Amino acid sequence: MTLRETLGRIAKAGTPSNEEAAKFQIIVPVLGDLGWDVYNSQGTDEVRFEHSAGGTKGGGRVDIALMGKHDQCACFVEAKSPGVNLDDHVAQLLGYAFHDGVTVCALTDGLEWRLYLPREAGPPDKRRFALLRLRDDPVEQSADDLEAFLSRDAVRSGRAERDAAKVLRRLQEESDIARRLPEIWRKMLAKPDEELVDLVRSKVYAELRLSPSAEQVVAVLSGREAAPSRPASGAKAPESSESRVKKTPVRPQKITGATLFGDYMELNTWKGALLFVAEKMQARHRETFLDKTSKFKGHKYDYVSRDDRYMKQPREIGMSGIFIETSLSADHIVKRSHQLLELFGYSASDLQIHQE
Image: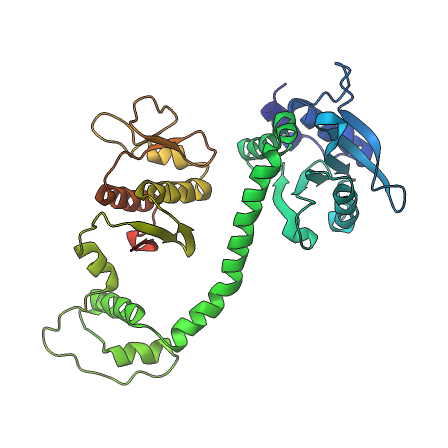
């Protein structure tokens, strides 16, 4: 049985009655499908049950230890009964894992899997990089994540820790954005800049064919009552910053970075900008990305595909196994980036290109 078949069976099966049932009905079969010699049929002794951990003082036992190279513990898997509050057991598991130099660890009741990087700094929630719910999440997504972070090859090669660290950085960045965004927005409303005022004026004109004054817009954004203003007959729509960008031809200047949805990426090539946009779209729309981008093609060849044989300069989008053509001029990089955003329902104005 493959991992995906096992996960499909788990999603439909009943809830394990206790910790031992969760361990041997779900956790052990999953680890076996991930390449671990769970029954020691090959004499590897790489999967150890009830393994001593945490040192002689204050230590204890962890349910499953997965061994790496040179007989060193590489991953701990702690099992609990379904329904148990996993939050109560995180600190102890991370303490054991940190003491023993373990790179990745999992706390699970079989149906919910919480994955951590024990050697990262901060409280437990800042060290968790993945949360998998086998009954709720799509089977493909759960399988991809388990293979990436708990498979034998990924753990023993160190790839699991490296990839998990990247995911954790992104999660921390997104958390920082969510935390700071309201504050930034309040500041923008309290003291609107010219670009925001222009954007609001252009939107109002598009709806009413009337152009409010800058003072009216500032008053509304700041929470004050806007004094009525009679626009001159035939008032011309204010030129928004977005329209100015579209009218200005993109010159092949040196690119320094790009910002998309508030995330800034330092860049030194135009190709990197297209790849940055593609990676954002693939991360947000993992299930539909390849299907939607199948419409993203030229006269002869696909711009995005799993098959890179017909591309001049293919670049892999993250670690998805999907490639995008990057043999383009700066103008076409920007144009194709905008097309890719609009393909998923976003606006070209969501992307800002920074140049010297």
